Image 1 (cartoon, rainbow, N blue to C red):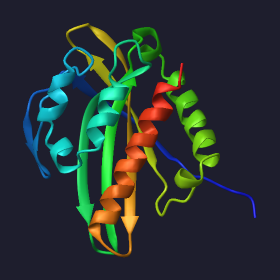
Image 2: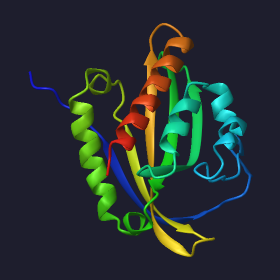
Image 3: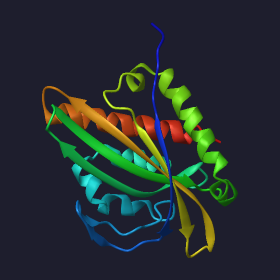
Length: 183
């Protein structure tokens, strides 16, 4: 049987303003936006990093100056209804504002992501297909409009939450490696 990977893709015509301030949501207080490219020490203040400590290294690698992408937001949660799962939604966009402004570059990333997942045994063996949401974004301090991508990754386990957490952190680390190879 041939290998096959899936990536659910959605397009949202709503718009998100970046930077954004702290706000309450159904999942608790959202950490206010900090441009991690300019201030990587802020990574340690992100609540999700305290919950999933190995995500810290992935964020540091993605947000290095001159890399293709930077992150804007992250949300994590756990679910134990059908086994154990840990989920991370990571919002990222192009550091190059010309690439950020053109939606077609997001679709190129999606195609490259599928190809990379297909070629990787760990990423091609997923219980749930990752989902990539593409949404309009406005960098208010730069007066620049473009597109942000939110990738939803899940770690799962039939045994325990620790195993699901570990798998999620490995997937986010894989994503950091993938994003830094894009140009």
